[in-house]
Amino acid sequence: MATSSKAKKKTVRLASGRKRARQDVKLNAQNTSLRSHFRTVIKNVQKALDKALAGGDKAAPADLFKAAQPVIDSVADKGIFHKNKAARHKSRLAAKIKALSAAAA
Image 1 (cartoon, rainbow, N blue to C red):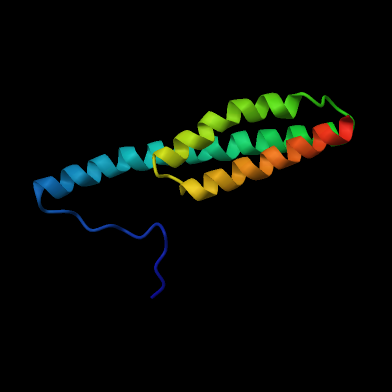
Image 2 (image 1 turned 90 degrees about the vertical axis):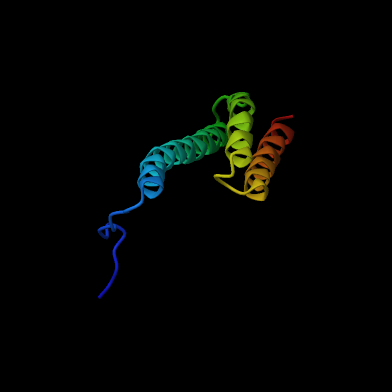
């Protein structure tokens, strides 16, 4: 029998377990929201970089990156993504922005 991600969960009997299950629903929703926001800000910077390479505004990616950095750091601080993953994303985006500004100059 293959298990699916929507498998029926067992009912918890202990009161502390039921409370934990209720808390998990809220925590899961919050983590999902933060994870989505993390991915969105990274995509926004990448799209701005692509537009800038195609001849668009060269300053937009840098501004979006400045706004994205606190989001990336907060997600790493909360443990939703590993701090090295956050650092890797920031480093790669910063390198692309630096290359773009060097090419423009």
